[in-house]
Length: 552
Image (cartoon, rainbow, N blue to C red; front, side, top):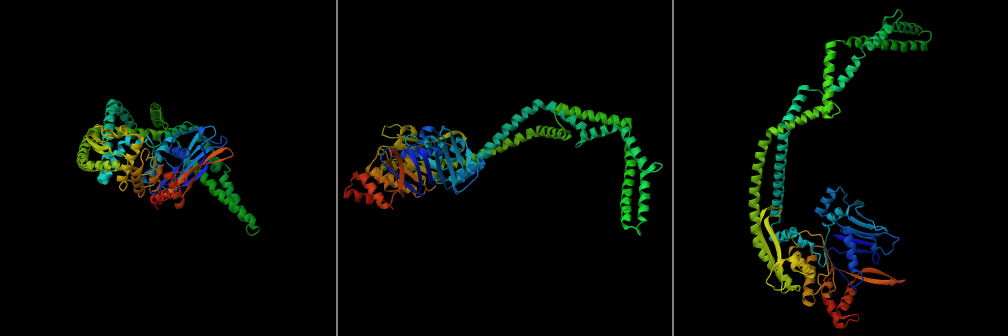
């Protein structure tokens, strides 16, 4: 639901803020007052392109900001999550046009592209302008409205879930078939690579460990000499350091009764003695580990060379990457060996799902066939009321060549607007005003069953008056009981049905024209509607008529 619209520096609007009722909002005003400009600003929110020509003050940027209550709008919130956008309440959509003409779009203060903005706002606003009823070019709307009045939307939803699974199975079958063909081309080579790695059987980080060991063995003499010298100096010399330290420690500890501080030094030297003794023992142990077995050295060198050759061959960095390749090849060969069985299982699953879809789509089609006649009859009844007495509306259902997301039907809405005897697709047979009234009739009949975004009708009552305009107002009021409606109108019969009446007018100050808007009180509504009926100085009869038209 659109809660508030803020417009700044757009066309002849300096700055306005508009709050909306959750039901039917009617917007009136003199021709040229700025009603269409407000629609233009809303179009920016919906993702239309903009340019700097809309700026009144070329020194300031243009801002259009809309606040929407989206707490119960599951589709919108799902799209926010899909595009990794923050969910906030209310959700704020903003467009800015800089003085250079550069446009930026924001959703909850996060910049988005116009494509993303268009996708998101399609869940928030449905704008019906003259010659711009794109919903009737979208078969999805035709299916949804027919299914809504048929009362089997849950069955259609279940079918769609199963249809999605059917498409996933088909995709998996095609992917596996393509993979199998690729595997067959590469089978011998992959088998060779696998057997080569299988034979090498490198353990985790083995090549790196071999490199370290070979470095160590390559400096055996240096290592042995250094360890031997260290052990000799520490423990085997004529005056070994370990023995001398031990001797000094004992001497200092003998001073304990004379000088406790000196005895403490002896204890510290005793600790050094223990540590140096361990160092000497470790030198001897490490010396024993040095192995100059030529056969073992040759074996290690050959295995290290094999590892490096394989790493270079496959363009890999370390042993673990080589092991991952080995595992990947093993999995690929296993899949190849079982691909035939998997394809047969997928074929069975696809056929089973196809049979399931056939049964569901047959039931859905029968319900549609039964409902289409009455739905078309009800629409014809409403069209006759709203100024299209010669119209004949029909719903055509034909079998589709294959399953689609709505079943196995092709749905087309047809119209003969003037008793020509020829039916044509509605979007081609109707004028702009007629299209708007057809959409109004359809949405009135589906209002209870379908969740709809904010509906905006731009002069849906063009070309009608009297009883037809009255009926349009009644339909809008009825639709407004279930959904938020914004309707721009010149007809008093329609204006009187609004839950909220917004009046657009122009002011002039310092040779500057500026559009303003205000919410009318009941008394102001009566006076305005009376002028719409009887002119600038309405008669008592016009005022009485206006009182009858205005609904609370």
